[in-house]
Length: 118
Image (cartoon, rainbow, N blue to C red; front, top):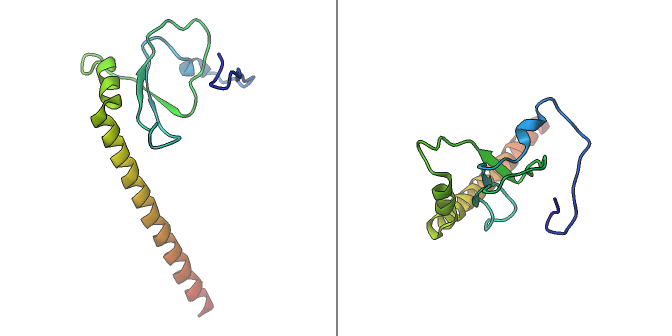
């Protein structure tokens, strides 16, 4: 399988449970990173996968109880206008929290340095 640049990525690494990470028909994925515009995009693998392909680390595979929620509906919701606004809002809030945590850590280090010097 080629990536966007047309390069096939392979690994010789193996684990006893590697089969758990192969993409299968019916898998639901949500993107977890890269840019704000890509966070939270949902997708369902609709075709049969005949190769042993491992999903990348930018995706999270969710196992959903289809008696409770329809995977295709959830993907449509995540990718809708309202879903995109929600994930952008959440992403912005996380950035603010991280900035606050960074400032708190800087203040803590300054206090600890002042205590050591006195």
